[in-house]
Amino acid sequence: MSDSSETIYLGAGCFWCVEAVFQRLQGVTDVESGYTGGEVADPTYHQVCSGTTGHAEVCKVDFDPNSLQLEDLLEVFFHTHDPTTLNRQGADHGTQYRSAIFYSNATQQETAEQVKSRLDASGEFPNPIVTEITELSDYYSAEDYHQNYFNLNPMQGYCQMVIQPKLAKFLDRFGDRAV
Image (cartoon, rainbow, N blue to C red; front, side):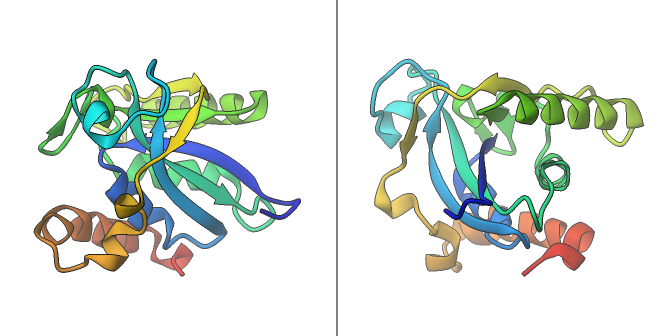
């Protein structure tokens, strides 16, 4: 990361979906799938999927704040998943799929709370936003086979049925910000 890089950790269901969206957003310099928010040190995918570790599937999103403001990044985050459904995104359910923003400083926390409040008050979403805004705890990289998943497996069934529609939604709303 360069001196002008910032990192935020976002949970919005399956990390393959989050990764695919943010890899296509201008100003994002790196995206990595991983886990945070739980109690178990160095969890595995199978442990996290059991729902007993407290971790969420997240993406570590590195971005250049000189070319992408955090507010704009979070706008994409909120509009490319359902932030009004507790512990569920589509068929994926459990606390590991919760909508969550894990911040690493007070500015990120304040910005996340402001964007969430503004969108909640806007009426854009039919139900209240339930996205958790929590200070980052330990972060663990997911196993190698989870990294860059959609780009390496675009024809896989989950990618076609779940990720591709999210990318279409992203491009429809934010196509001017896509790389």
